[in-house]
Image (tube, rainbow, N blue to C red; front, top):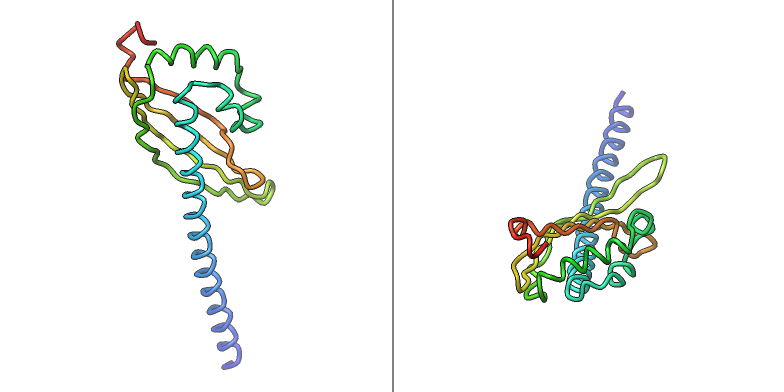
Length: 156
């Protein structure tokens, strides 16, 4: 009986140590992914919105983004948004990365961020979603919400 209790005790100890090690490892990986994805966003958004050049978003786009977006329409949208004027200040982003695990599909690393920027004609909010494939972050979705300008028909 004593041998069974000791074996169960050791098994429980190994389980606890495994859970703690797994949690610490996932936390470290999560922090690294948060830093990587934030750095990507904080470099990509200013590059895109400072010139409103479709090629800046296209070179960072994921295959899913390319499948969903009509780049001619995006070019027209960017032309309309240029009425906001030049980028004055990029105010940074807020968000984090996520790891989804599935027995069927494996794992997928994504990130969701919001950001804001000031332009000559006012401010705007942006949402950007990313996916990490082959060690590279790519844009999964990008939206601009110039709410501050909804009252002004001469801007948008």
